[in-house]
Amino acid sequence: SSGTTSKQVNNEQDVRFVGFLGTVGEGSLALAAIIACTAGFATLGDWQGYYTSFATNGIDAFVQGGGGILASIPGISESFGRTLLAVMAILFAATTMDTGVRLLRYIVQEWGTIYDIPVLTGKGLSTVLAVGCCLALAFGSGGGGEGGLIIWPLFGTTNQLLAALTLLVLSVFILKQGRPTVYTLAPFSFLLFMTVWALLTQLRGFYDNEQYFLLGLDAVILVTAIWVGLESLSALRKAASESRESSA
Image (tube, rainbow, N blue to C red):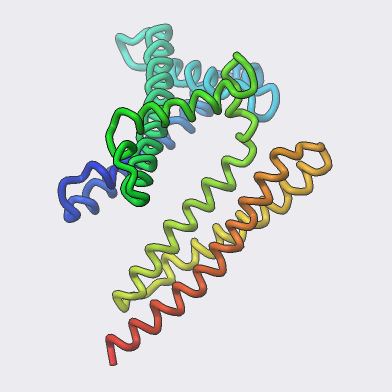
């Protein structure tokens, strides 16, 4: 299930079915990747040869380990298995790029609708702007296309902050329905706490390493996280009040 699911379903009644199967698919894919990167090595020597240090040989380990597992199936050679896994990894990367560009295009189009700029509501210019932003991010620091790696250390915190926002919206909706919210509020509180903790930890690290660009971005995200926390209290209090009034 990608971030474009909400734009693609024909009917809201299909969301639960599509979302559930998408979650199962994502979970199965994650489990398969973990198995390929761990159980796919025949000996301890092979394992130590690939995992020489933390966060090294990620894609290579997935391809080699998965190829070794597929080679145990009759009729499939190890080289064919590795080729198949390499193609899968490339497809995952291409899908991620497609989703990112498409979501950015949606955002540009929605800006055009919100601020009454008709030229931005079409697919043409919005796509050009979306692709242009991606190219600027990738090649802004040079021709190697590694510009995105500059802000990569902040990806985890921003991703978890987005997850917290999603859980907050769900909590408010469920609360207005008069249903228990502990199942969404508990993970929301945990995610928000861990996000703020991670941001504070990174803030000190960026300052010590004189990475002032990341320091500024980290500060902005930290303020956003605090704002999300304050807004969550206000939204939940308002939703609880509306729920009590409707049930009275």
